[in-house]
Structure formats: C-alpha cells, structure tokens
Length: 482
Image (tube, rainbow, N blue to C red; front, side, top):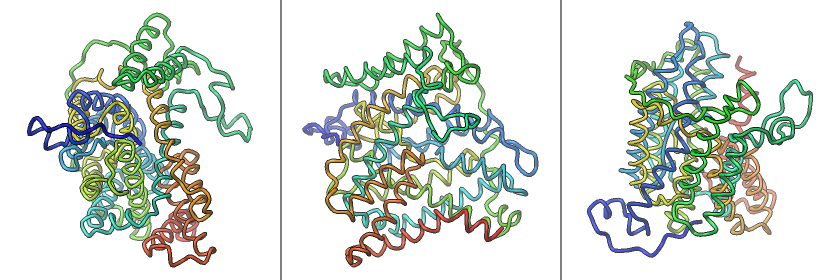
C-alpha cells in the first residue's frame, strides 16, 4: 500500500476541498495521475463501440460505432468528474468491459430482445443499486468482509491488472481453438515474442521499473509517454499495422500522429433505453434473471476495485475506504446514466490504479481525467495515439505494487488462507473481479462452518454467499427455465 507523504497545510480552497495537501499530494502530482489514468483508460472509447456497436438485435438494429463512441466518452467524462467532486477519490469511471460483453452476448443469443430493452435492464440494475446504497445495505456488506479477504481482493486485483497488461501487450495470448491443445494461453505468437509492439512493451516495462527504482516522480506517466514516443517512431519507420492483419501488429489502435480531427458527436442514443421492454419481449422471469446478473457483477466489482485502489492510494482508515457511501452511490449512478445513454454500465475502472501509481491521491485527478474524456468526444487523436503496448507496462508495475499486500494475509488459518487464495487466483484466471470475490466468500462461509466457527461469520456473509451460489449456478437455472 502506498503511504501518503506528511501532510502540508492547505494553501487554497481547491486544496482544502479535495484534501490534496492532507493526503500528501500536490496539484502537479494530481495532474500526472489524471493524465496517466486517462492514457490507461482511453482505449475504452475505441473498444466499447466494437463490443456493443455492431451486434444486431431482434429488430435488426445496431447501436452504431460513432454513436457508441460519443456516449462512451461523454458518460466516462461526466461520471469520472462526479466521482472526483462528490467522493473525492481518484477512482475514474467508464463503461465496464465485463458488462458490455454480457450485453453483446445476450443480444446475440436472445430472440425478441432489443438494445433498448437490455439497456433498460442496466438502468433498472443501477436504480436497485442506488436504493441498496441509500438504505446502507451495500455499505453493510462491504464492512462485513473479514480483513484478510479485503486484503486478498487487493492482491487479486493486482494479479488481475498485471495479467491484463500482459494480455493487452500480446506477451500472453490465447491459443487458437483450431490448435487442438489443452493449453489455454501461450507466450506471444506460437510461443515466441515477435514484432515491434512487443519491443515497445518490454522497453516500457524495464524503463518504468528503472524509474521507480531511482525514485523518479511520475515514473508511471514518464514510462507511458516514452513508450508512446517509441511506438510512434517505430510505426513511422517500420509499420507493423494491426494485429488483425498480422500476429506482429498492434493490439488495438495503431499509433500515428494523424492530423488533428474535430468531429461532430452523435448523441442520438441518449434516452433510447426502454425500462420495461424486456419484461414484455422475453418474459418477467428471464428479464429478472438478467437484471440480477448485471446487478451482481457491478455490485461486487465496485466493492473489490474500490478496496484495491484505496489501499494503493492510502485513502483507507481503519480498514474502510474513506467516503465509501459516496463512492458506491456514484458508482451505482454510473449504471443508471450509462444504461440511459445506451453506452453500457459505467463502473470504477481498475486501470485507475495507473493514475494512483503516477501520484493521484484525490478526486482532483479525476477532474483531469474526466475533462480529457470530454475533449476526446471532439478530438479523435486523444484516444488513438497511445497503443495498448505503451500502457500495459504501467499495469504490470502497478499490479506488483498491489500484490505486495499478500504478506498481510493470515495464511496459517485455513478459514482465511484458502478463501484468500481462491479470491486471488479466480480474478485473473476467470477475468472477473466479481468471480474472485464470490469464490472467496463461498469458501469462507463453508470452511468456517466445517471448522465449527459458524458464529464467527457475519450473517450478511451467509446471505451474499448464497446469492453467489445462485449466480454461479445461473447456467443451470436458465436451463431449467428455458
């Protein structure tokens, strides 16, 4: 966990409001953190439209690439700023990849369901979460979790974002299904590291590590900027193209200093969600199960990510995230706004850890990140100039910083050690923070019962564990109801 520097006396109203000096930070550090967080997250403006913008619904309608890109940047900017102003935490928000993939796959496999219908379900899930926050239930669940499991969540997220960095950079790749192998992933392409993009990642990784070792301020941001500069030079001299064209290409966006383009955004998707259309088109039971699935994923993702980020930023007191009620309220509102704009549920982004690693400690960093997202609505190069390979090293390094918390877990107690282990390993391997939390919770309640220590478990842990059992068995339940 990052230890805040000794607090200095506030020098302005801005400083006092965001607690910049109180948390041992500075305006310059917050700017660095905000920039780093934006660079780490900006890919979502390109990727979210590819995930949900092209799929046809029951009416043969697509959301469209340009409209989704516009609302993705808009909602990310607005929600990130709101999180900074209201909760005063450096937790940036954007469309969650887990939820948008769920929406896309559901549209593809569910007859009679439209995009307006499923976005309405996202809004409903957000409204339910808002009620759970306002009644104190969501915070109560948060506080019922044992400290060792909270620490395991931090460590699991560390492994998860490091794994994301390795996958995004192409260092780790999924084995093609046609290979007929039981090995799910491999090193690079065919077991070998190939291409200039890989070189950019390796340069960025070792350069960032060197800066950290030498205690250079803004090591994360300098690493991203240096890697981006190298990627621009390499692509101009020896073009690699996209990974879609060759295994040695860039993972998502090809870096280039294109002419500055000012675009007119298309906001036609805003307000198109149909709150109760799904209940008519696919039936109350199926629609309710979808709301439950969306709700559970977003509910626990936020809990896990906020713990991990707060631990790294040094904004936890007595094992609790500062202003957690406000954090969870804004997060819940992100689903309402994201669904209402048809851009998918907006969540606290785990890549915010990159901004924290670069110095962000307060919500002021969110103002910087949010404004850049709003500018990205109109200026396209802001989100296409930085390739995955330039940001991935920061994720790996920040993941390492979070993983160091593993020493604080009581591994000698099987009732804590096994659940912690399952929490940690499930997150990267299932590519889901919520899955890791669920595995840990279920294991914790089960082992405590076997140990004869059931009374030590908070009743909310039993309730949440039961909910996760239902969640993990959703495939079986859907089979029964179909």
